[in-house]
Length: 354
Ligand SMILES: Cc1cc2nc3c(=O)[nH]c(=O)nc-3n(C[C@H](O)[C@H](O)[C@H](O)COP(=O)(O)O)c2cc1C
Image (cartoon, rainbow, N blue to C red):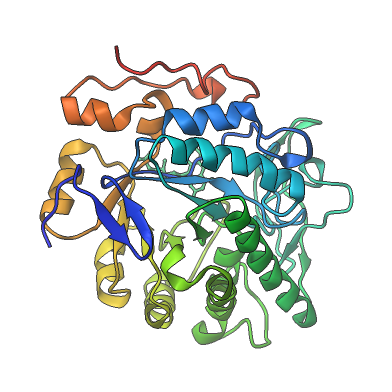
């Protein structure tokens, strides 16, 4: 069905005032105990005219944290911090879902609580380095392979994070299922060397993601749960022998769950049209992402190929992106040097258009 950027839309139980979604962006500015602060509240409040804000990735447990200063969504203090964020967004008429991000093998113990472990489907270390406040760039941790009897506990972390998100006032939750993090590690042949029910065949490799979604749905209901994918994404040393088959199988299994939406990032592979694959195998509402400007976003909506479009980098320097697009105002650039640095600089100090 043909639509326009500034028209409202309902995705499951999520009511969007327009079809401009703020894409999830890690900004590494959480406070003590990985809890959101007044600074985070102000950042999201400034951007609340988006039809929907997807929060930066938030870890569902101490083990799921990979990067420095990312917020959690599993303790009372974190819930209290997020409650201020969602309250501010709602007061401005916005809506917001929490992106649940378990990094799995992508992490350093230097970024984590001393009691945390780095776990993954298999003990395969990611090639590459990660930033830490303590020691600068360091090798990724060597992960410990999860035992079969531990997997239900990790699934339980997604349920707990979903419960926490609802208590914190979020309108829903989004499963982060790309960028080389834990769910993507289960999906992909390069990172999943298991020979039990969670590895080997594609039917087994999708099991973890389906169980995580089912756990989230059991808490929030399917109409408040979304998922984010990017088939063929090589980020964080991820490799899959056949992403087409993996994602077709995954989405065929997800379809009957009737999620609120699927958030699809364009595939970096020329031989894989992620949006077409999602339309064929998922069937429900799509939020599409990656490299869209206003004209391309209008085009994809007019063609009826998506329900909404998400914008990441454009939201960094343009808190009032909706108004700028509506009124044809120029877009501001952003400063890459302050993407992940603490404090308000390069975070809450981008002005709205006069
Ligand atoms: C600073 C930054 C942080 C990001 N953090 C996340 C994240 O936490 N979770 C996620 O799913 N994607 C993350 N992304 C990816 C964006 O959501 C988005 O997919 C990407 O920027 C492409 O969209 P764009 O062309 O509109 O910027 C991040 C991107 C940027 C620039």
